[in-house]
Each structure stands twice: as C-alpha cells, then as structure tokens.
Length: 472
Image (cartoon, rainbow, N blue to C red; front, side):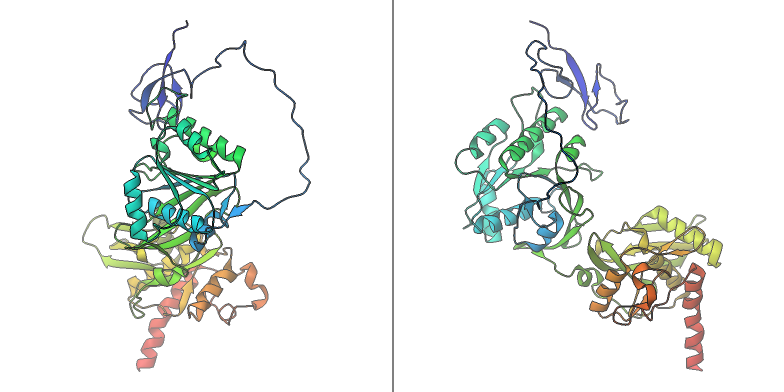
C-alpha cells in the first residue's frame, strides 16, 4: 500500500505547499499553513488511473434560444426578497456572512418561519446550537408554531441522508458551513479542505434536486467570509449582514447574485421581537436633523436599484498640531484627502491649519464617488460657519481638475428627494436623465448645476453676503 503523502494547505487562500513555512508564498499571510493528508480534497490526485472512465460527449448549443425566468420562493419579507433579487431561487446556493451576534440566525429563523407558514418544507440544520436554543429563539420571535423542521448535526453525509427522507425540502438552512465535516476528507472541521468539500456536497445536492440551500459563513477580523474564497465563487449569491454595535439597524448587502442585481441592500431594524423591515431607509438615516447647523449636507445616493438619502456631517476646527487630524467614519479616507486637495488647489480653500472630521450619520457606509459633491459642500459649510439650505440635496463626482462630473440615476435620486420633501438640488451639469430640463416635481428644472467645484464654493460663500445685505 502506497504511503499517503503529507501536504500543507494555506487556510487563507487554499494553496498547496509541499513543506511547512511560516509565510504563504501565494497570499503572503503568516502562520496559515496547516498539515493535511492527500487522501481527498485540495491537493489530492486521482485515486487510480486504471479506474478512470472515458468521458462522454455533451450536446453543444447556441446562445440564442428560449429563456425562462428562474423559479423563486418568495419569503414575504420584503427587504430579504429585495436583497436576493425577488426570493430564493430553486436549486441555488446562497452564502450569508456577518459578524457574530449581528442577527444572521435571527433573520434566517424568521425567513424559515415565513416560508413554512406558506406550506413550504423548510429544514433548519444547526452545527453551533442545540435544538433547544433554536426553540428559545423561535419563542422570542413569536414563530414557534410554524412547521419548521430542526436538526443539530455537523456531518454532511448524515445531513444529506436526513433531508432526502420524505418530501424534497424547498429550502435547507445550514448554520454554519465552518462547522460541517465530511467523511471524504481527514481534515478537521473549519479547515480549507473540509469547508470546500462540504460546500461542494451541499451545492451538488441543490443542483440535482432543485432545493435551495442557504449557507451561513463566519467572517474574519477583516470582515471577509472565513475560509477559502473559492466558496464564494461556487455559490450563486453572496450576502453580507452588516451593522454597527451602537446602532439598531442592520443592512443585508448583496455582493454577488447570479439571478439578480448586485449592490442591492435590504434594511432591517433590530428589536426585542427580532428584525423589523425598514421600508423607507432614507428617513432612518436622516434621523433628527438640525436645519441651521453648519457642516451638514444631505447626499442622495444609490444602493443597487434603491435611492437612499443620508446626511453627511463635517467638522473643520482649528488645530494646534503640526500635522492636523483627518478622521473619517463611513467614507473612504483617501477620497477625503483628494477632496481637500482639490478644494485647496482649485478653490483657494485652506485646510492646512485645521482638523477635519467627517461622519456619515447613522453609521451608514458610502462607497460610491457620487458623494464627492456633498462632502465638499459640508466641508466648506463647516469652515465658513454657514448652514446649507435644509431642503437641498447634493450628488456628483469631483475630478482632480476640479470639474464636477455627472453620475448615473439622477432621476431616481431626485424622485426620492421629492418624496421626502426636498425642493432643491445641486447636481452635475449634463445628467442624461435631465436632458431638456425635464425635472421631477420642479426639483430638476430649478436645480443648481455647477461645472466646476469653484462655482459651488462661490455660491456657498455668496450666501454670507446675501444674508449681510438682508440684515442691513
């Protein structure tokens, strides 16, 4: 009998090494190589070339042909259905990640109960909690009477044998993928080999039977789903459950979806009765605004297909330090430095002797460059001490030359602003949706559309002169 070889697998990227080293040559991470056998999983070769079967020819087809919409299971939880693109797709695999205690199990328990109440067969398998713990959560959420089938098991073969008994389940929830292990590999649960093999087995079951699979994944301290990134490529959709500890809302963000739009979000509010849907997140993120406070600008952003209004707060204060502070919460710090440089170089606004603090209200995070104009307006407002108009929204991208560049979905941003009572807008010139001056509710037609950032700075500074003239 041939002696099994020992190889070392990186737990961060999954690369195979013939000998142990302190640092992985592929990803550069330290202390991630773990000794694993080659009997199965990553690094294992074919068992025997004598038993290899000859391949069969498959039928090739063309790109043209009939297209059918993916069959979906609608949960009835509007924000969850929005994030998934309209519901769970039959035969698909969904990966949900998030920080510990963020509410992943709570959300999936509510979704399982809602689907089971509609007559679907739902199987909830937990590898981290006992059945009694799940029942306690169900009682707290008020869904203990729904016919959800529970199990506490970590062996993949036992799970597959259990769910294959009886009617095919419509949805199988596995909490979590890092706790599962399969007999096909000798590695410990949670290692790259086990996570990949367990995910492959469950995805194979989903594709062959048409049952939807939801995998819960742990996240690392950097916020990424733990384990090999190959699992994210194997599944059909990846959702991240986000939220700040000091805030009561949660965001379900789509980063991959083969059956719907990416960068979609669903907003929930955490309470003692579980997660409650937030149908209008703009009102939540705006919160209690002080209309006469300088340094506050309302940004009309987009998250997937949903417009979201959020308040951007800036504080510019004199500094006694040789190197002034630059603190950012909810936005990219490098982009703030770029906006400050453009304001100094092209607009003559000096921040070299001031500390700059920038915050996105409500703990929300902004990633799109359309927030440049709102950030610049908030910075100039705080520096000059002039409050911006309370009924005005801002959006637009700023280039390094100081030009204000158009952004997409201007029409949808203005519709959301009009719905919340805003009457004015500052947006780039040349937005394609506003061609011909066809504004929405008068907001677009009467909007201020600067071509250069200096025009906006001059308009804000000019409000001081107009106020002085009114007082005289």
